[in-house]
Length: 201
Image 1: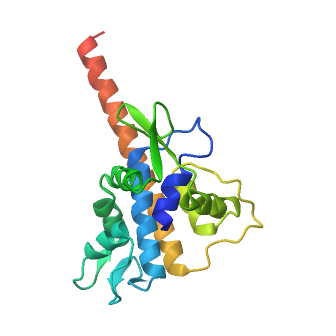
Image 2: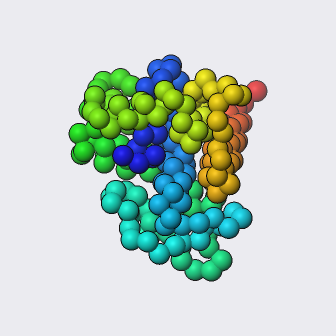
Image 3: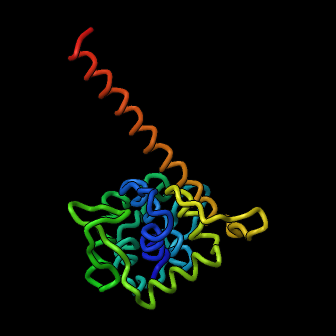
């Protein structure tokens, strides 16, 4: 399992009263993929840009797709641009892949509601691994979960991110999620103003 798959599973477990937006999760999943590619040595980060490396594609299919989509021109793609480009509908892509792999099953209600039915994780070794990372407050997973609004109850004594490149990616994910929320709020205000205009005084 990859960090992105672990993150997807974790977003369905804690605080069932908190709905995770598909857009927020898609951005965080793109960030998780990038962090795994950094860990595999497939890319490095230079400032705010992604510099592809030369190792073979990862074994994981979705991570391999992410690696194949990397922009290889100089000076490299900005991390923020990658998050938006790769993140488009990525949550739905992961949901489909995890269902095909038998990691998710459909249910009538759930935190991540795609269409008429939600999904929930199956009790598999992969789910237990994700839960284990979450229980020990693994810094990367906790930071990405926090970006989509899930607080794992980390304290100031818990270890933080110790890799500058990973820290840069996590910060970019947080910024992108905040930007998406600002867009939502602006649209809400504009729609409300439009409705009021048509209603009249």
